[in-house]
Length: 267
Ligand SMILES: NC(=O)c1ccc[n+]([C@@H]2O[C@H](COP(=O)([O-])OP(=O)(O)OC[C@H]3O[C@@H](n4cnc5c(N)ncnc54)[C@H](O)[C@@H]3O)[C@@H](O)[C@H]2O)c1
Image 1 (cartoon, rainbow, N blue to C red):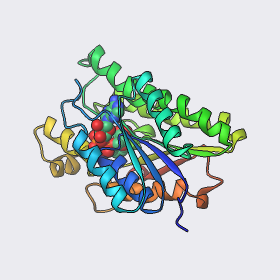
Image 2 (cartoon, helix red, strand yellow):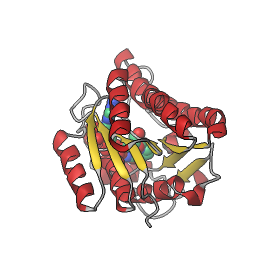
Image 3 (cartoon, rainbow, N blue to C red):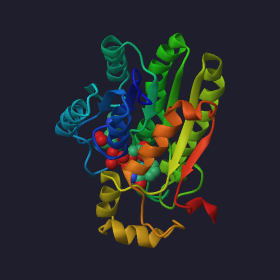
Image 4 (cartoon, rainbow, N blue to C red):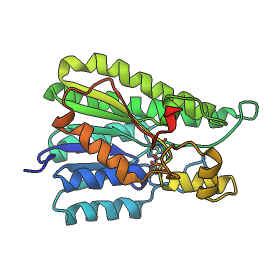
């Protein structure tokens, strides 16, 4: 029996990047996947978001792996869309065992130039988004008296980020939500942890570099944070960590911060 047979995973930001890698990895080990994504360009930041085609191809790839998936299009800021997706997940698959709060955005701005729109979008998507999703998924898990919630924070949820104050605030906030939810939900046998990756090779990484007029390699070299000699890690590295956290092998991990940083936070 595979690790996630009969488990259902709800993944936000699933169309591409880390969310997609996690969806494929959990599905390969038997999980049924609810792939939630805004699947269109939004006003900010100006880089590529997921698409309907990516969501459709993800569902097909998961079916080819021998599992099942549904795609749900919606914005994590939109409670109606989130509620509809959670209801559809339960109607289709019966429950939700794993929630990966992963949808997020990133962009640069110094504090003196940051606009209300930039601040609000960052906080609404990266911090209120996980709250919107968790408040609809938690009751499903509380009823079942089991579950695991994994919040994709960042190394910026544990340190400061240059020209990233709104991003850093949102990710520290998510680290805090993780701890508060771990306390609230432990009596229901629900674990809540945060993960803290260094730079990951995703469309976000490419998009941030393009907005700076640089290549991703130039950006990685300029920030030079990883101790290990890699400019970034791959989405599959994050998926390996999520596989572990979501499994019973991590059954007593809750409230914890899992750092996957190639050594960045060491110095
Ligand atoms: N890429 C990195 O270097 C890095 C490092 C550490 C943490 N993170 C965090 O990991 C998470 C995933 O990042 P990624 O690199 O895969 O990003 P990405 O931009 O490559 O993919 C993000 C996905 O989320 C979707 N999405 C964005 N806003 C949404 C919204 N409002 N509602 C629903 N879906 C939405 C996008 O359409 C896209 O499919 C983010 O929370 C990010 O902050 C990224």
